[in-house]
Image (cartoon, rainbow, N blue to C red):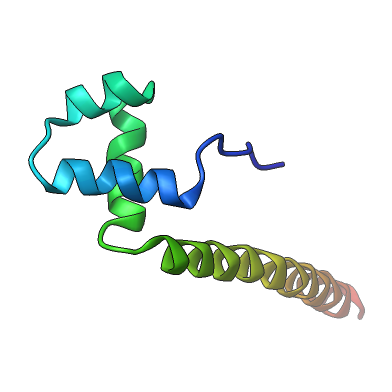
Amino acid sequence: MKKKNKFTEAQIAFVLKQVEEGTSIAEVCRKTGISETTSYDRRQKYGGLMPSRMIRFKMLDEENARLKRPVADLSLDKSMLQDVIKRKP
């Protein structure tokens, strides 16, 4: 299960904008209470996106994860069936 983010997309965008405008990452992290690692991860993932785009990106990411599960299940089933066919004389 995914950990719930305590910041909204608008807040994340505001933090990223502050860093882009020249405020040091350490200062922004201290003010917002996030780690520098989190800041770098968010900048890498959401850099340059507006809040509406961030929401859309997040929805697509969740949909992609949801669609990958059945594919993985079917691939496993196929692999198991192929093993059974190979074993039969």
